[in-house]
Length: 245
Image (cartoon, rainbow, N blue to C red; front, top):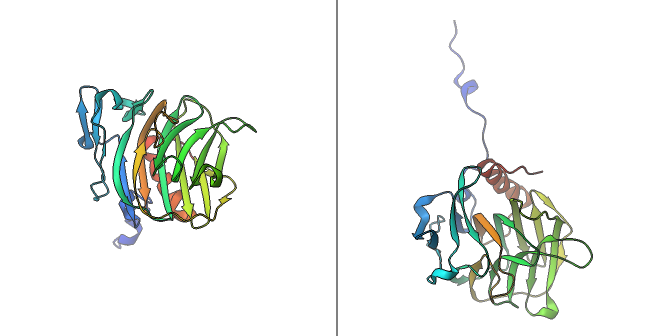
């Protein structure tokens, strides 16, 4: 019998298995990796970055620390917040093209997921309730309240774990929700400087604190292509068992 061609035994490529496989990864926080979590009793004082950039999220005030929730989402741990709990990643140079992907849930509308810069400066993601139609996952970029623009996803269901993404490109922003994205919003403002990042809320508390949780947060210092966003979303879908389109 002739030996089997070894090329026929190769497993099919499984796609992206690590966010570091894509260039310009700036922050990677993984709630399911207990080695990255520093506990203060049942709350989290530090969530260490796996990107290799040492951009760790921290909160020294016990009352403002998220709660560590073991076995919270399909057997994996997440970080939960209820009121004004939040964490901060120290400032680094802002790139005008960037991408954030995150696994999150929110119990109500008008709740922030993350923000860079001051409240009226920089990009952010939040579940908000536009007057026109129910709650939406929204990506916002603005320099002042008068210059802000929003891109929105489909209707959001409260208390549902979702894979979200916000992409800021030069001149436009886009939001994804479980792989689906809506119309882009365009802008002309160009930001520059060094900004910190706040998780579970927007930059000026008590503005839009998150009543919910984040399981994983991934941020790139560039705008990923639609194909790359899909790769990361599929990685998160497989890991957290959340269906995407």
